[in-house]
Image (cartoon, rainbow, N blue to C red; front, top):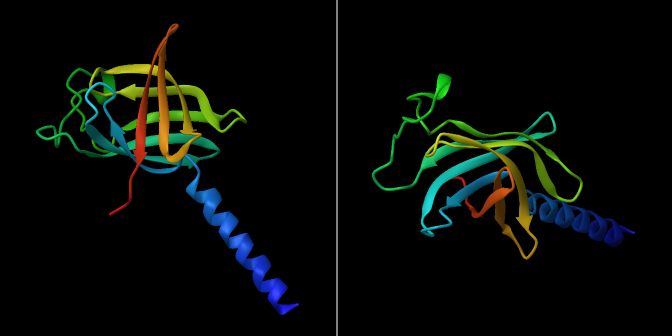
Length: 146
């Protein structure tokens, strides 16, 4: 009986650890899909059942402390670090999050967005931005908090 309880508890904790390791939330290193170089660290978090993301750190050499020069309104000349770029995505039931937007501070443009884990590697996140019928997908890599 005692061995069975220990085994059950062990399986439960292993399942919890696997489930938490295989979700979209956490710290991600953005990778430029054109150059293959890291650009920033983005923290993706859940609030009220929706997904949000905020730039934690710029990794591009020479861009540290950059501000959103091309932005309009409240974001004009605001620091990119700390800026919320993913806003209010909702789960769609297939492990994907969609239904709202992602903001590109470099281009000062907002795109409809869909995000999902790479089915072959849960440490890779697919981030797709849409404008009309055109889209572009980047692969971000899971990072560790320092």
